Image (cartoon, rainbow over all chains, first blue to last red; front, top):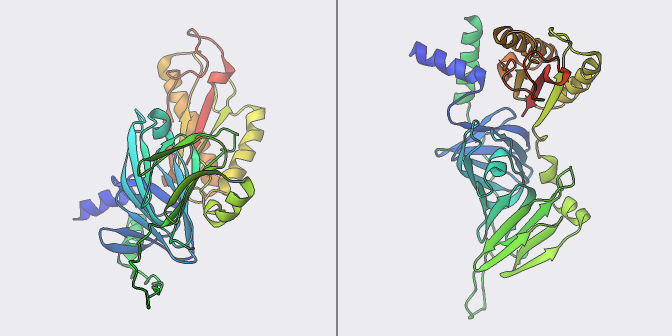
Length: 145
Length: 219
C-alpha cells in the first residue's frame, strides 16, 4: 500500500499518469470533468483522460492541451466527450475521437493529424468531421437559438 | 519524505474534495397546446467553420452530414445545419470571431519549440541566445502549467561519449533557468542526444555552431 502510494506520487510528480492524455490549461466559471460516473470540478493543471467528458455551465469555458500538441477549448453551456484518444510519441500514430453534444468547440489539430490525416474525428449530433491538419470551430445549438 | 507526505495529503484532499453541484439549467419545453398536427423533432442547429492558422495556412475539414459531404478548405468556409437545412456558406472573419469569442479566448497557447545555441565545447549560451533566452522565459511565464521537454545536442567535435555528457549538461543548465522562473522541476524533462541528432548533417569532428543547441519543447 505504501509502495503503491509512493509510486503514484512519483507518477504524479512526473506528470505521467498512465491514463493522462491532456491537461486543463484554462478554466473559467463552472467547468467539470465527468469521469466514470463522477463529476469532478475541473481546475487549471488537472489531467484529462480518455473517456472523460468536459462540461461547462452557462458561465463556463475551458481549454485543454493534449499529448500530441493538439489544443481545444469549449465555450459556455458545452458538453464535449473525449471518446477515444491514443498517441504514440515515437511514431506519432494515434487516434482522437471527440463528440460535441452541445455548445461550442475550437480545435487546433496536433502531431497525429500531421502523421495521418484520418487520425482525428469530431462528431456532432448530425455530422462527422474529418480533420486534415487545421483549426476550426463548431457550434451546436437547439433550433431557433 | 516530508515533501512526499505533504504531496500525498494534497492529492488525497483533491480526490476526496466534495464536488460542487453544477447549476442545472431549467429547461422549459413549449407545450404544443391547440395543435393537432404532428410536431417534427428537428435536430440541433450546427455550424462548422475552418479558420486560417496564425501562419496564414488553412487546412481542410470534411463534414459528413447524412448523404452530404462538405469540404471546407478556405478561410471561414462554413458548413451549416439550420432548421434541418444543410448548406455550405462563406462567413466573415469578424462574425466568426464574434460568435466564438469566449471559446477562442479559452484556447490554450499552441505548443511550440525554441532553439538556443552554445559556445563551442561548453554549456554557455552564445550572446545572441542569452538575449533570446530572456524573451523565451518571459513568454513561458505567461503560460499556465507548462509541460517542458528540454533536449540538448552537440556538434561532432570530440568523442561520442563526451558529447552525450555535454548535451545532457546543456539541457540541465536550461532546466535550471526554467526552475528559477518558477516552473516546477517535475514539469521539466531533460534529455541529451549528443551528436546523434544533428540539425545540420556533418562529417565527424566538424565545428558546426548550429548543431550546438538545445530544443525547448513547450506544451
